[in-house]
Amino acid sequence: MPGGRLTGEDRRQIAEGLAEGLGYAEIGRQLGRPASTVMREVTRNGGTGGYAASRAEQATRHRARRAKQPAGRPAAPPAPDPGHGRDPEAVRGFTESYTEILVLQGLPRMMARVMACLYITDTGTLTAADLVQRLRISPASVSHAVTFLEQQGMLRRERAPGVRREHYAVDDDFWFRSLLAATRTNDALVAESQRGADILGATTPAGARFVTAAELLALMNESLRSTMERYRELLDARKQE
Image (cartoon, rainbow, N blue to C red; front, top):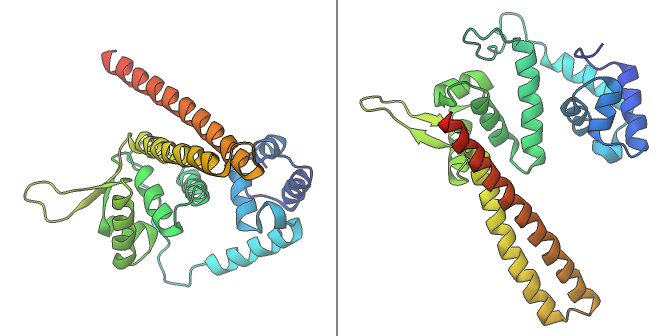
């Protein structure tokens, strides 16, 4: 049923949708499920080019058997719910989907897990001990992930006066900074593509390829900058309300 675990029939429809060239959103609409659920199912089981319903069903059963906790071992702690009436299972499922999307965006899996864990908290901040407990990973893994994410500008370290423990925090400007970095990278690619076209000759096949790349990247940046400007206007208007 919608919202529950995927069934064998669901997986068959996913495989048929992929064969027809449908996107995750369209397949999700046909199943009555979020596109992220379909995406997670496909990426876990062979990707768009290797997904098969029967293999996916077998792999899911195998993962479920491996995930069973031995007797006496405590289950993973539920997602934090400070009185908001959230469904812990729904939050946990969403966290998994969000992690998969970050991985598809190019973030290493451990870093994606840490980022997702931080991002779903209301405070946007956790200690190393919190991350160790919630993700069931080693302190060394936390340290490595945090160092990477800090270098990428995706989180920051905080320490209150007189408090020994560091807190790792994300904020609402994370995606804005990410888009800003993307526009700067694209600017460099546009300039280099234009240079390549000049060197190779814009009328040659190789040169024309660089001309096309420069045009596309320039249009992307124009759209991104317009979007960021509108975003800032929305934030300013919200602050004045």
